[in-house]
Length: 362
Ligand code: GN1
Ligand code: MG
Image 1 (cartoon, rainbow, N blue to C red):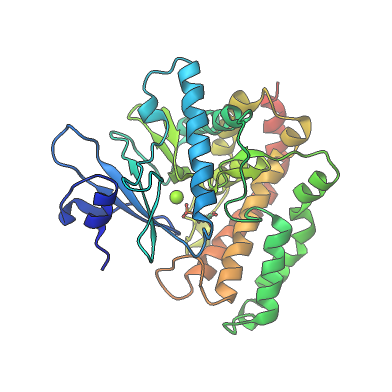
Image 2 (image 1 turned 30 degrees about the horizontal axis):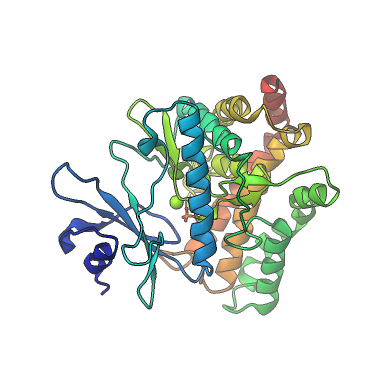
């Protein structure tokens, strides 16, 4: 058992062990809510960083500090008053001054808890519109960040790399599961070329990388009680990427009428109403800097991320479930099938999606 109370002390915060409780349902890091007594000091969020995945914690925290610093400056310049609710704030280790602490085994970090804020696993059309504005705005604020950001996970959203990992997993067949899912593998590989369109456009020089969030699952945004976006959380994967990352990953989660791991595929479909309202908001927030090639391919972005996630879940299943936390045997396969069903529903809606993008482009 880790002494989380002692870890909080490193960050200059004294609480009882009972005040530290598990929080949220992320698939990667372990997260705790730290409740402090009284109203004088804020509550906090303590996280154990998954060091197997984020191998370079220094790079990770450097990115996060650069991004939160730049956003805070932007918000000040724009005259926003409630900055502490609009941007995450990390606490420094009292001895080293760094925003993380290594206890010889795990890496820990602490941020200020933003109160009266809500996260959702699903959103309605109105909230999707705000989310579109929020992520568009996030990219806009970071468009002129002076710091150089490295990829905290190299090749994180590189589709060609993800397919290479998939092919390696098929060849290795570590968990002896390939035979059982041959059909699904075939249907995914058929779509491989199309999925790598962004990488080809980038090589040709027509598609830029920008600073993106790269994990815009709907539950990674904080809303206030009125449904306004307060801020974007879970900044581990903020890095240079195609704008498709943020557009596509939001829709992958928010426009799915079922759950990410829904065992009942009849529940899983692409919700066009959510697509439309998110697209409207996103183009309002980001329309000023997007290139035509980025706007043209927004429907592709939705396909790309349902596809990429299906490939990543199935790769993990074939490797014997070493990356994503699972709660039952076969969980990663259930996740894969749900993502693949979502992809087919997106494919069936592509013409309508293109028409929506045309409707809202300026
Ligand atoms: C992981 O940390 P969490 O649960 O928000 C993953 C994302 C996947 C997502 C699938 C670092 O996100 O890329 O899209 O699970 N993050 C990492 O639910 O791999
Ligand atoms: Mg998360």
